[in-house]
Length: 270
Image 1 (cartoon, one colour):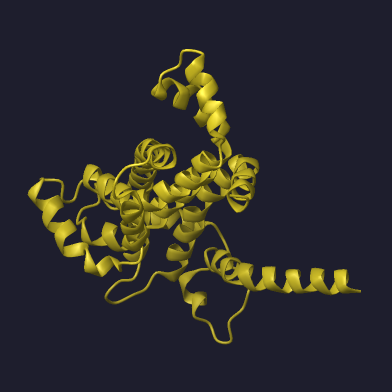
Image 2: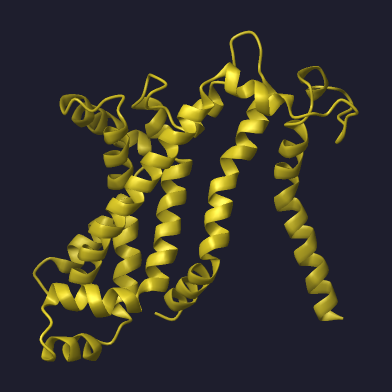
């Protein structure tokens, strides 16, 4: 009886979570004249793929998609490389101020984006990287790096030192031991961290909005907001863009789901 009640509760919660996405998907196939129909209807006899076709004519959505893939992919790689080195250093070495640095990294995640946008804007502008993909990549990397360092610090701390010591005895250097022994053992954690980092960059809106002004650097979240016009809101095309926007993260999660679950389980045991 308890198991049945639990299953029913989980189905209800899953339905509540999926309901907005299902409504967005249904809206993405409707003509604009029927989107604001009262009372609202889930299905319409005039549903078609025209909103998906028209959104590429309304805005250069293909450019936004390419920009998001480049920015999210590059930021994920950079955060993993730097986060792995920093996380390994925090896990293996003792130095003055170590706890303070870790605390500062943690506290940095509590700052609202609005409190750092002015210095970030000035830095990006002074470096000549305003309205460029490189500027966005560096900003996204800086935003996600403290979180990635903390995650990987936990995973590396859970790997026994004896494994690394054995590699050093066999003739490996610190870097070689990290590359050949530690990183393969931490692969589930790296996979989970990479997924978090990719999603964080892929979904980022605030900094991407303020640091870009042209279609050559805008990402998908910013592009979706442009469907809201001064005289007309193209809700069906916006919904179509939102559905397409959710496909890459979904595919990525399906590809790395086993590694992701292993990483979460390993992190829970630390």
